[in-house]
Length: 371
Image (cartoon, one colour):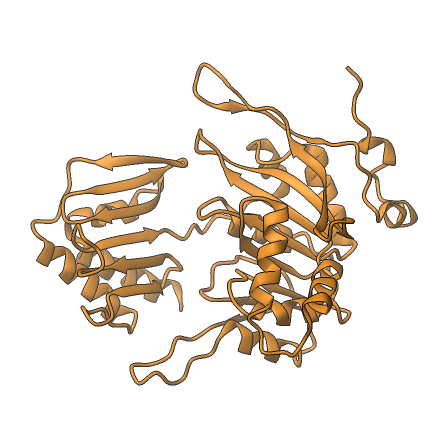
């Protein structure tokens, strides 16, 4: 969609939202949350704030706004199908739940799509990662390591995934697969694929799994999956194990060990006839690194761990070894949390590749500082 059409669509959504439409133009607001007609919250700099000077006149007015948004994006919401999950024309994500499932009345969430991109240097300056951690991730992308980005809702997974994509060396073909197009990948040779929901008759659905299968026939060098959430996990694991280096994906999990266990559980939903033992072996050999990103108590989003997957421990659990980990966090007088991503003393198993490629990251950088 061109800029003019996107702008017109945005104005239409603003009109639908009536008394809170102005929040769409507030650059400091990253998300709008409506819990019934008179309970409005916004997220600013990672913190929730209640809006007290704006409300809908009634549940009917709020429901009318939600219905208008649904129609604008070619969807329907009703008592029989009381949920909406869609992407607006400007890339923002909208979700809604109405009665009888939402007990306070219609609930609405709009996560605004930011047009600005962030560089690795800015990411370091914002305190999201240490300089050494950023350099290590840049090296991992150069070497084509398969990386899983793990984190909770709103933790910054998409921003980090975009940043990693922009670190990929030139001369490759990327295929990006998403439920809703969000990744701003600035690359010479990139193909974007987006899933499609079924129509009112339940036909025409194109799933993430379908697109992953198709992508393998489109000669990708690297496959990037916006979010791994279902049985497409098995297709991604297969791609990683069949010569597609440097694949990326995000997953909802609270720690790197949780992330790889969740990936295994999702892959088990695939229709391939494969034993549990074989599947677990494939999972462990597919993923090289897991990056954990978290939204902390002060609203900041930071990388809290970078871990390497090294097969299995004697008890059969995955051997997930932290290479970098967040130091102890201390709250300062201004409420901000102070801490940094530091090495753990573990050296990555691919240190030889770093040395052989003459990359500027000596083994000594992984050593713990004494004292």
